[in-house]
Image (cartoon, rainbow, N blue to C red; front, side, top):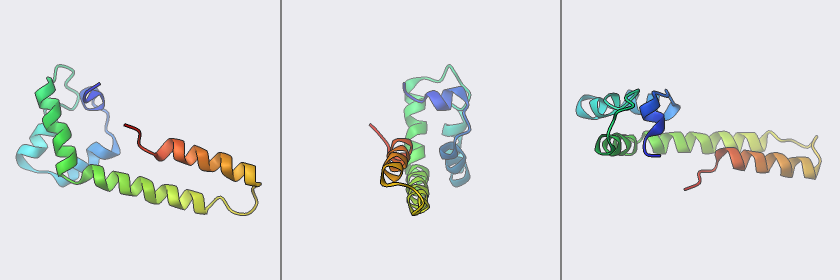
Length: 99
């Protein structure tokens, strides 16, 4: 559901990065919904827009991709092909965004 992490007050990496990047009205839009279970859809849509426009979402997604690449590189030669396939699948399941 729309903005559940924001409404519940979860301090996700995405939120922390967005707060680091924003000031003024954008920051207020975020802070107005964080931990506010009564936040309405228009307020939540504005806050979600700020997550995008601040560049925070793109930064987090790029960082996740970097870490997934590092994890795959670290699988090494000590694993069987099946083991690598299993762990590669786990990396994908944990890091790839689904709509």
